[in-house]
Length: 343
Image (tube, rainbow, N blue to C red; front, side):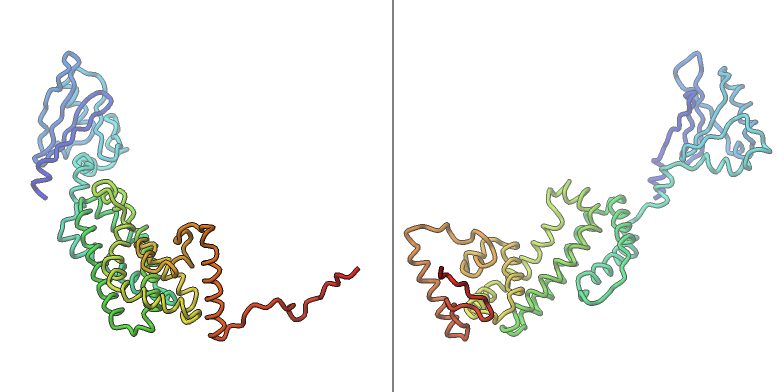
C-alpha cells in the first residue's frame, strides 16, 4: 500500500493554470509565470499548513508576477478563494487537510486486498448463494439483493473479477455434484419427479444469481471471456447432473409415455423441455416422447405414409382402450339437444 501511495502523483490545475501536486513526501506548488509557459516550481514547507489563506496569497504574489488570485482545488472540485478572511473560512488546519486529500488517496485508502476479499466479501456472497440454491419455493428467505450486488460491484472495481468468477463456478459445481449424488440414490420410480425438482429449483435460483452478478458478467465474462454467465451456469448443470442421468431418464420417459398419466403431464413436459433446452440432440434418443412437447421434432409428413400414420393412431387407441380409457363414440353426448333434420 505504501509503494502505491509513493507512486501516486496528481496535478490539480486551476483556471489560471497554476498547478498543485500532492505526493507522499509533501506538497509542491507550481505557479505559471506570465513571461514563460513553463511552470516554475516553488517548494512549500510543512509549516505552510499552519498559515491562513491570506498568507498563502501574499506568498504567491511575491513569487509570481501574475495578479490573479491563487486557488487550491481539492479532490472534490471545491475551491477555496484566496481573498477569504480568516474569520469567514474554516480553520487553516482543516483547509490544509483538504489540500492533501485527493481522489487517488481516497481510492488507495479503500483498496480491497485479496485477504479482504477472502475474509469479508466472498463469505457474504457465498452465504447468499447457498440460500438461493437450496431454498424451498414455499419458504421465505430474507436476502438483501442490494448488498449482494454492492459486494460484486466492489470486487469487480477492485480487480478481483477473475477470482470472483472462479469462486462462483467452483461453488455451484460443488452444489451440483451433491445434487447428482442425491439423484443417484433416488428410486427409479421417483427419478423423473426428483430430476424435475432439481432442475426447476436450479433455474429458479439462476433467475436471482445472474442479475446480482450482472456487473461481473458485463465487464469480465462478456468482455474478456466472450461468454455469458447464464450459459456457463446452465452448462454446469448439463455436465454434472443431466449428462450423468440422461441414460436412465430416457427409458423411464419412454415407459411413462407408453403408460399415460403414470407421471403427471406437467412433470413430463417440464423434464422433456428442460432436457431439450440443455442439449437438443437428446431429442433423437426418444423422438416419440420429445415430439409430444417440442414442435418439429419429427420429420415433415409425407403423403405416401398417411396409411402408416393411421395405423399408428389405431394402435394407440387400442392401447388406451385396453388400459381402461373408453373409445371415442359417434353417439350423441348426454344432455345435448338433438337436431331434427326432417323438413
